[in-house]
Length: 447
Ligand code: NAD
Image (cartoon, rainbow, N blue to C red; front, side, top):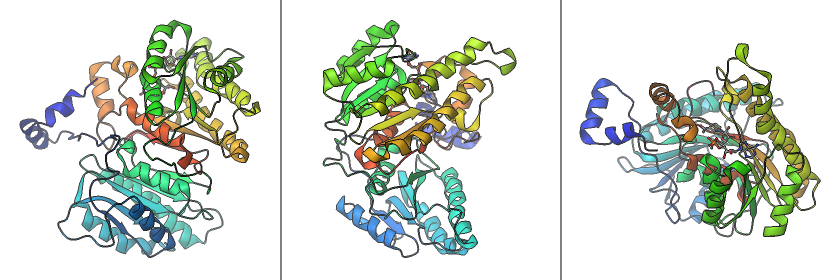
């Protein structure tokens, strides 16, 4: 479904009218194209001197990017990497902030700011904690100020993890690339040195078997397509009633279809048996199937509340127990749950849905440590407003307003959610555990 407003204001006349009337001016986002450079243009790496800055310069040079220590006035930049890992007092942020501010006007459309930081923790001295927490506010505000489809995100690297860790490189590449087009104003947390770099960055999932539930349409179908593009073999799962659409998706991605209601008691074992019998293993499970049954709580019937909880979080919980009990799910496995910004910020009419989606966040947090011994991870993505069949049914005016209420002033596409899931499913994300990545364009409401 195309965004006609973006089409309109992308024309010369439309752009002028939007400017004069002070209307939103969303840009076309730079999205990933296989074979395209990670980022187009030089990358400025700036910030107080640190080992992390040096490690990141080496990584960027390995990717054959044009790395700069100083910006040449007037020269267009593809990205700015800001190293705040060594800040020990809030005053340490001033000089670099002014440098970044000066370079911003030279950032290309679709450019990127990526901030490296160490998260503040309980044992920090107060000035250190203030500086590290200050980076959080700095980034969230800067993301609101970006223009031309550019984004600002960060990588929060836990104290004992080196900046050369696979997941620091993995997160950096994800955030610089068009894969993160609708991810804005937040940090990816790298909490361990686990994970490994892929042999081929274009096929990071080669040799992996992935299961996607609710894959007959919408976001799930797109997740299947992107995981297959990245090299995975696919099992696509959906209810029998969606069987025809499911077969089409399976054919498109060269995978197999499994007709299954995920709330059935033996769903986990059936998924494992199918994946092992047809593909020889099971490495990645994406809990995408989900439903909404919106009502104000005052008008909520019990079955509406119960069914949303049953599909969105109780079924993934039960399936995970089967996966964790299985000796087939032990090769650096990945679980990715679908949360929602409603589960973070809350949403009127969605007590049932928000309960289930916040539940998914709790689920991955508690599941990740149980997977560590086999190099596994569990994480969640939280989509904001995404253009799908579900959101197409909203009344026009409500949809138009909802689409613009984020820093990028547009809806995300299913592919944006799929790219983030593909990142979390990859070997290079092995050090990201129990985290939640919002795919919401920095939704202005709550999250
Ligand atoms: P959708 O309704 O288009 O697709 C969901 C799929 O899940 C359908 O094919 C459906 O048949 C399947 N499904 C439902 N119950 C099932 C069950 N019991 N067993 C097996 N399959 C089942 O939804 P979507 O918009 O593509 O959303 C996908 C996921 O993303 C959901 O978890 C949703 O909550 C989440 N999400 C979507 C948005 C958005 O803006 N579209 C925002 C936040 C989160």
